Amino acid sequence: MSSGEVDISTPGGAGAQTRPRRHHFAFGDPLFRWFTIACAATVALAMFLLIGVLVKNSWLAIHVLGIKPLTHVAYNPDTNQYGALSSLFGTFLTTILAMLIAVPLALAIALLLVELVHPLVSRVVGTTIEMLAAVPSIIFGMWGIFIVVPLMQRHIEPWIQATPLGRLGIFGGSPVGVDVFTASIVLSLMILPFITAVSRDVLQMVPKVVKEAGYGMGSTTYEVMRKISMRYALAGIAGAVFLGLGRALGETMAVSMVIGANFFTIPHSLFQSGTTVSATLALNFPESQSKLETSSLIELALILFVITMVFQVVAQLWLARARRMTGSRA
Amino acid sequence: MAPRSVRRRRLVNTVITTSSWIAAAIGIFVMGWIVVTVVVRGIGAWNVAFFTQLPPTGNDPGGGLANAIVGTLVITFGAAVVGLPLGFFGAIYLSEFGRAGRVATGIRAVTNIVLGVPSIVAGMFAYALLVLPSHHYSGFSASVALAFIMLPVMTRTAEDVLNLVPNELRESALAMGAPRWRATLGVVVKAARAGLITGAILAVVRVAGETAPLLFTALSSPYWLSGFFGPSGYFGGPTANLTKDIYDFSQQPYPHLIQLAWGGSLLIIVAVLGVNVVTRLLFQRGKEW
Image 1 (cartoon, chains in turn blue, green):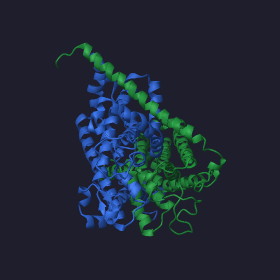
Image 2 (cartoon, chains in turn brown, purple):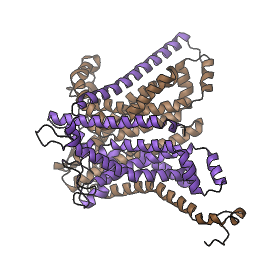
Image 3 (spheres, rainbow over the protein chains, first blue to last red):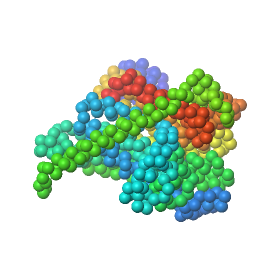
Image 4 (cartoon, each protein chain N blue to C red):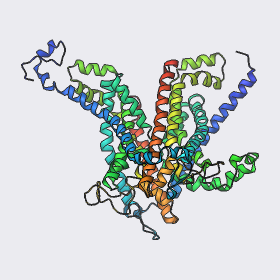
């Protein structure tokens, strides 16, 4: 564009005509805009590439094995058995147990931080919990395998079996320590700080006026929490729970180090070793012998991806709906 | 609503608040327990050899994790070089141009999905994309896996921070005749820089401690890093790294290797918590904008 032309990049730009200097930047803005679009689009590109690459490499397993992995428990490459059911069952079982432990604890701690303690204490404890959320999973794995497993094996599991609970089938068998129970506990401690931190942030956004109105009506702290704060922050708390759930579903190190792994059965007791999808991948993929095994494990990764994606999409849709209904922000 | 006795309501309240205290106590206790365990068991492994020597072979005691420290730094740096700028400029698009538009909403949804991708799947992706076709493990493929994890984290935090910049600043910059790109980079980004730097550092630290994505990409190696893309310049070669070494050594029957694993854990905890604390102290204002 020569400097004599009218600046068409500025609609109705009468002022631009008197300032020819701006013409130097005429291409700057569209260029910048397209550059940022390209950068933003890489994430979408990467996701489609991920789906494409995983589908392509699991095609052999999908073609040869069909839906057999989804209906079979046993995984044994020597006999060409590539059942995924045991892994999937373990993933869902540990995730559900971990959530059952972590969510009430997280909400209780969030309540404490927002409603009960001095702001200074709340800040110190809150920061500590945020730090815990940043501790990598391998550290939880190390702590789990060298501290929690022996403790479970020698003390906690025999103790549970000595109580009336021990007569239940789910606490039966010999306590080995490396089992579904230990894995669920370590997993719950891993996602606890994360859910707590997000819940606390959300609960802090509940306007004081609304809560004070509740107290003014004579409500107890718990009633204000449950009937006012929780309702107001429902969308955000659900978001925190879903994010924690996503993390638990895919967690690899902390679980694979304490669950015993490579026990391809449907455990009938929590004190039995088991496996999860990610643990199966971590332990078998490096030792994979045949093309079919490699392919079947990549298919397993694809299944894990689809599961977490479905959870994400459902969570987002649900959150959008909850946000519209309650008018709260998350 | 049916009237309920004050005594019952008080009782419920006491039970719930007490259990909150117990829950918080458990949470803090576990945090302390983990840190203390790692410090007590790991500090014994820290000596000059730990930071300067290669890991011992077989039964020999001594040695260190120097090659793994270098490897982890290089792999993480490689991921940051790719992930941070892409996330940063992507966030600029979302907050400055795309806003509530259809494209931006779509990209935001995809970003959330990628944010939820399990790290082991990211490792499998990098394996299938780079290791399988080239027949070589490499630090580079590990960096790609980590960049994939870092990208959505950076995008989301950067967008959140940029959204906090008041619109008046954008309007003033544009009113002064600044083109959009200068208004964005010179004014908006500058105003949000503390938050952006905090977000970037925390995103890097988060992936630095990852293990699962490295299992099928960097693998591990008892030798020094011989090249990012491979031992003799070509595309391949396992690369030593801290987290995979910790994982491998923790499964070994030799006490001195387990000790090294604890030493490595301590290094990671010190680095992760240290960077977190320092970043928070330096950029406390980052929370506002």
